[in-house]
Amino acid sequence: MSPLEVQQLRDNTPGCLSGIVHFNHAGASLPSQATLDAIIEQLQREARDGPMEAGEHGAALIEQARRAAGQLLNAPASSIAFASSGSTAWSMAFQALGPWQPGERILVGRHEWGGNLASMELAVHAGARVEVIPCDETGAVCPVALEAMIDTNVKLIDLTWLPANGGLINPAQAIGAVARRHGIPYFVDAGQAVGQVPVDVQALHCDVLKSAGRKHLRGPRGTALLYVRPAFLQHLNPAQRDVFSAPWNANGYDLRNDARRFETSEVSAALLAGLGNALQEINRLGIERAWERVRQTSARIREALRQIPGISLHDLGATHSGLIAFNLAGWDAFELKRRLGLKRINIGANGVAYTPLDMQARGLSSIARISVSPFNNDHDIEVLLTALRELRD
Image (cartoon, rainbow, N blue to C red; front, side):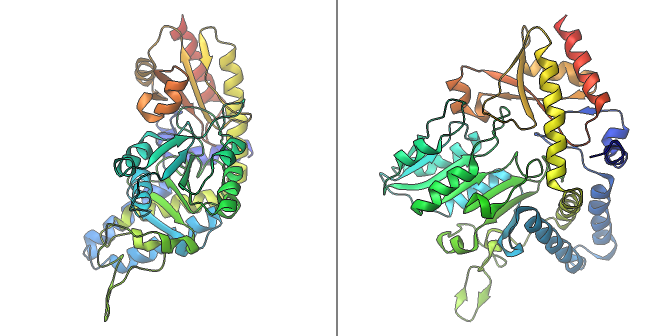
């Protein structure tokens, strides 16, 4: 991306114009003005014409968003459902796999998102077991070790692709190849991947993939994507149904034969209009170009952090994402986040609950987290580094 393109992104982002330095894109990024406009326009349409009466236009906007999501993920639009959060989307798909039986096994990476593990408790109570796939020498989930764990009791392989607590990029495609070879359902938590790195669900061999709209996609809070491989849909029986997901016909109520079986009739067309605009923006920008910009910027920040005494980085893996986990000696991660916030510098901070298996394995009680967007520039970087040096002193 050229400096002019980066500046154009910033000029179209109200948060950048306000003077905030935002490095918390893994928590929630800053929306563009066009995304805000799309939300407001639909709200105004509903206020002017009536919320239900504006529904036809809202439905068209939702379908535009669905097509844009399919384009980004290399998936048919019919395989995309929308939800209120990534955790909700994942949990709905997981529950639809049931019922679980004693002795069935769920294989997860050590870096599994805590919310997914919480949902798995339903299966554990039914007698299933959650087992951790060993890591390789870099700390990433090991496909070879996974292969050795496979037996007829494995009902699900689940992978958090880019964990919340650091820069690891797990080998999602290689894990998917193992799952597909053995005919085992494969779920991918791509909450930190979609909008940051190229995502091709065909290459991943995944059956289910989810992501939040508020993170690297720069969409509104309260939105999320759920991809379900069309041929896998028949294996998912959602517990939650209404007149939209299971419409009535002469034979009774039948589940939809596409991913919309996970949706309900009551949705925010305004929020999904905003998400649709955000999806169209990343498609126009090009995810490969956005990822290259994030990769370069985060590499610069990592190198600069290594030069600051007292800072320890907590990266795993051979290649790294735009999530930079670190600690500053003498500082609690959450207090560091608060103090930087007083300077109008936003970063993230995670405790054990976000990625409990990995945090406990590495003896980490908390981490501070910098996460990068294509619109972060040299000025943002210098402001952040200057503040960290000042706090160190």
